Image 1 (tube, rainbow, N blue to C red):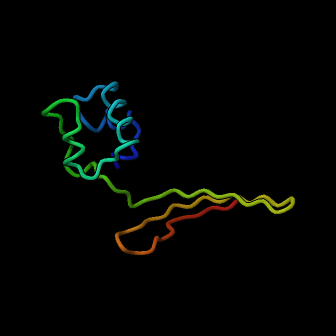
Image 2: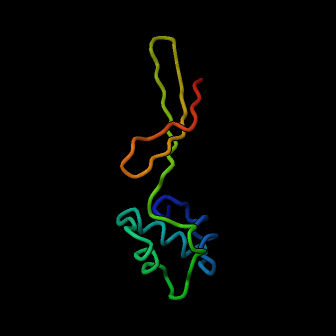
Length: 98
């Protein structure tokens, strides 16, 4: 997801993009997230920069969830990985409690 990927990952996924350019690009999405890959392409710093087809998106299907609950002396932490497809309820792929 180009809206969440660290600058270093954008640098690797878009051949020819410099790390400085990737950092600048990542900073712009805070105020204005990419709505499509076409918009992402238009906001690249130079024409002709491309990525491998099918490797980037503007959405996410997987989400990491972390939680913590403390009641008295009891302290429980949990982690889970959820998968969400369009219009469907999320599915728990794995979870762990400590």
